[in-house]
Image 1 (cartoon, protein in one colour):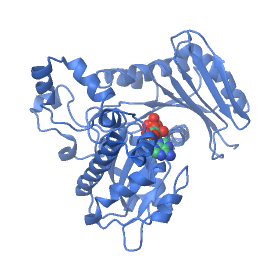
Image 2: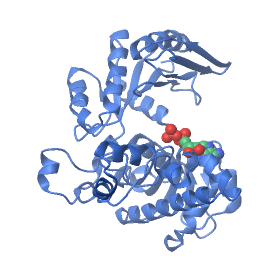
Image 3: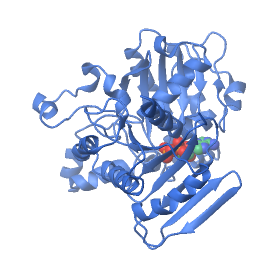
Image 4: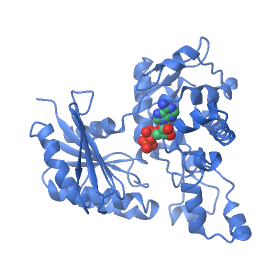
Length: 395
Ligand code: ADP
């Protein structure tokens, strides 16, 4: 059988990220991004081994953009596509693994719209467009939340009245599951340990950030909750605050819930603390130049990350290693070093030279002698989504 081709699609409200994954090739034959969909500036960027190209598609919606993307994907796949894998943000309690998409599973995703009112409708519109353009191709949904469905009840329940959970689904779900699953398995491979008999702490640090405790290939706890706002300091998200902050802001400033929610999601995190940027590259550069806001944002980010990792350790009986991934985790050696300064009690010691070497896609171990393993592992959610799609095609 020749190597199979899977198209991976990640639809946002006005964007589509896509990648063609060939099971025998480590790089993607074609990938790209459609952005500003639904506006006169809608554009699709394509990238392959011979370069980049952009196509203006004024006022294109998801379906119109996919209609432009799919023929190019088919051509790049040598005329034969085997399936499509869709990233879906929220699977609620219904989806604990990736699933073939059909009328029944689509209704299940629809039922979770209330839990992810911005994301799931965008994911659904991509799925519906792809299904109408390619009705005979198998399509698979891969959920950000599914990996965390193995959390025990003491980790996923909030201490609020029970009916809020039983009648309204108020509990911790966690996100970034596809990345935590992929990198914890890769870490086990790199360390030559069985994934089903090893325990990891994982820090996924991108624009969104979360930690996870992974035991024998299963999530046992994670820092994000009902929504991706809980937990760590992120690019523009506050992470944990006192829940009474809402009341305080309403009473003192007269803010309504929408304004508070928007501030916590879009104006906080690195951006809010630094007054400068949500981007860790800018923060680390400004910190080196002595910018007080950037220095504070960096320090709060690293301390809160360390605190979260220490609390995740409660879910482990042994520790085989700590894994850094995501744009910050894979590139910002200074963030890794500063975070580990706060975790000496867990025995972590970093090797400065190895730490500096593991950037820009280089994977490796960066601990000093006598420390538990510390690994840098580039994430690859697209490949994991393609692997899940292939596994369901084989089943
Ligand atoms: P997303 O969550 O959107 O997939 P990424 O995983 O690409 O995001 O991570 C984006 C973050 O990674 C940004 O904060 C960016 O500044 C940071 N980043 C990327 N490269 C570097 C670098 N060399 N040094 C520090 N931070 C970096």
